[in-house]
Image (cartoon, rainbow over all chains, first blue to last red; front, side, top):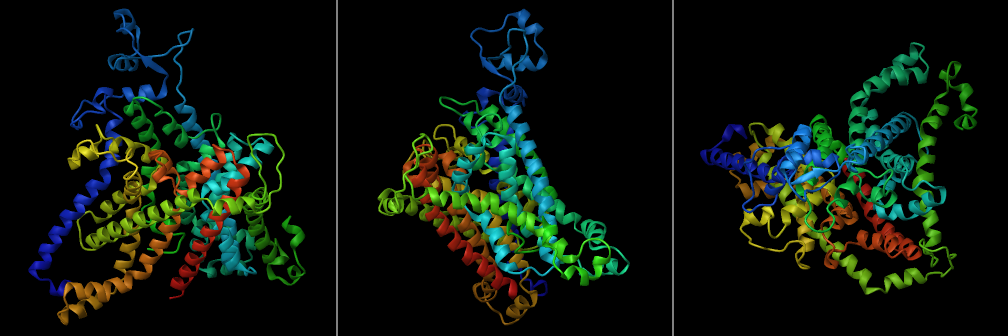
Length: 319
Length: 301
């Protein structure tokens, strides 16, 4: 193609580059808007025309982590002077931090939900990837009767709408007391991610040449030793990519968390929308919560960019 | 557990001299996972199949009465449920068609030497990695008729997106298109970059026009991958719950998953919702089957 490039083609190329930049800006605009709203003072969050240039503040984050209420009257100079710097930014915005009888700052519901999200996503990822790696090796290296059917069965468990699975799981969990527990959600997410991890890891395992282990077996390794010492190190990239995918899925999951948890084990995705409530929500606080919640995934997306294609299509397409 | 499965083959296996035989390793590696999936994925479905023939309500302590096929008959005769299916079908068509157009279009634009191409591609992928529920919530602010950025940027005044029964479904689909077009783009890019360059060179020598080149070379060669993208997105769009549930409560945007959720966890018609779940399940399995068959066909090539 490069050999026969006409001037009109070069012109079209320029138009295409401009169009690509435009599309990129449009696609990123909502994410930029979340990030910028997270640093706005409350009165600038919902203005017309929208506020683009402003003095960034961290008051939304202070408010996100603490209980606060509207200020009835401005703080007295003594109160203001006694308050730490982070409390003053909230005073300036017309709100105050709620303290208990002993003068202790009260935490909001957000930190515990964020922590729940971390615990549940990490534990279920470790379990799903751990089991998935072994199973994928089994499917990749040994003859299994009805392999295609088994793999389809494994995949199909992931294809069901979450609500369909959630109805019986809710009843079963209620019977054994697993509703609103960390263990309950961890099991659900592990089951949900396991099928995915088996499929993805099988693709990675298939790519590791069999000869490596065979050479090790000839050298007197047992199959187990060969697996742990030869195959696992070779599969490290694949395991890491699969783990990031499982983590993101568990981290983002909403429907199961909404149905199975309400307080103790609630994760951030059902919690953040519940904060909108009625009346005028404070969008800066919601944006701050959203921003913190999206940050890990955004970082992982950059780490994962070369494996995204494969993960998103169950390993059907490789780069 | 797997040790009981060791067969007589073990003795003849070469590796059996030390350590476990291949067969027992295979069983040890595969059986726990399959059991786990059966217990937590298949057993619940059998459990709910039983309930689907009863009038059980999880909100009361009343025992479940067997009602035979009553639930299924009622559901299939309920115009309300049919309208939910129709809404879902409409939603799937709008959002998948939109994603295909935008995604493939952007891929065509990106499929050339562009400065910072890697960075741009990665940035475009960001929306689909984020949580649908949490980002979807923020689109509520973007769609807001009075201070939404979208109305301001497009000069639409006080246009109602989510509160207008006619617009709500399109608004949800638009957010979905924003999130998932990059997925179609990514697959299309993989397909486009696999088209052999010499085909284009030959076409250029033959002085083929850009339309001819596109319809006779590009499209036929990318079609299988586009098909994968379409089936994949169809399955996902059919399941949509988070986005629509968070963005709007308009009955005109009540997808089948939302109807199911309300039936099960707000109206507590547990038995009936189990029957409904089974109807949905059969439909999903049918689409999944087509997908896997197609995947295998593509892989064989």
